[in-house]
Length: 128
View 1 (cartoon, rainbow, N blue to C red):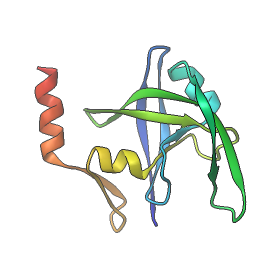
View 2 (view 1 turned 30 degrees about the vertical axis):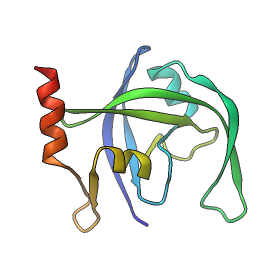
View 3 (view 1 turned 90 degrees about the vertical axis):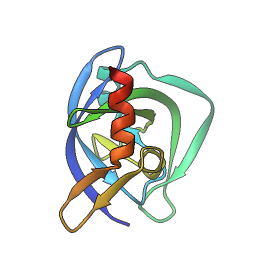
View 4 (view 1 turned 180 degrees about the vertical axis):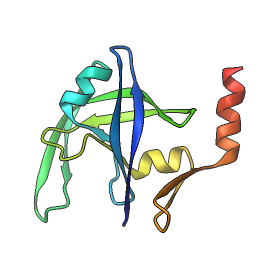
């Protein structure tokens, strides 16, 4: 498990905001803190709430809402579902599901994020 923290611009139907996002290879889901989420996109109630384990042993958090938002790494536009997590210690977390979806690699030695060039080309091609 490892983490890298970098600023990302998030964008949704409500607005946009640049926040520090934690790229966390130990987190399954991507998450936003409720106050940050409210500035970006309207959250939707989950049909069934989820209880997820936290880094604290034996501690679980109940998640009742999620949203879809775009986020930018440089000029590369990506999007995914974000769980709205009460009392989240970080502004945003990019979890393994998002990393795998977009083939994002984490270089912990250099604290950098690597986006697969094939994915970046596909995204840029769609914009033209």
